[in-house]
Length: 112
Length: 113
Image (cartoon, rainbow over all chains, first blue to last red; front, top):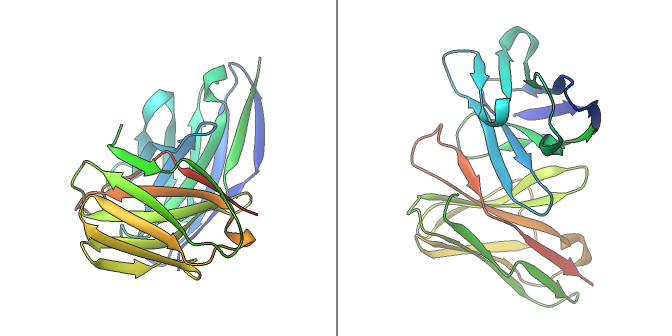
């Protein structure tokens, strides 16, 4: 079975500071990994995904994530936070394409 | 934006009443999904469909049924709503490839009193 653990349900950073949101996964087979963002009262929007190939994945809005098999991690980073990055972020894992298993989410607050 | 609409967007109902939520897509995608989102749980899969009249259960399917009579529409029915089904419900669609992205609709906020 697959599962995802997101460390920290709330993260606060200052504007301009590094954003680091942590995601660890469990999977018995090579996983597909995703990060989604959700703005208030909206649906989920894909930030980036890893399927195969290069382990450093670049996404929209300056975000990137690195797949580390040895650490079973897929942490999300952005060098410099903007006020517009305030949202909830979800990590998800899939092995079949059918069932996405989501983490419980991390709410990012950006302090001016 | 992926062409996904959900209706209604908000609904308040009473315990024991039937409720049907509709997901409509204009992308002609084969796969469609229903999730519920609850604080502290993230999103959990209720049911999904891999074609017209082809559906399967997800992680939290008890108390829910689905139907798909046309490619573009996927209906979620709560036969007899309970307060534990108060949630935000999201529909998603995916293309044919196993690595294709799931795209999400705007959600339906359902309150069962």
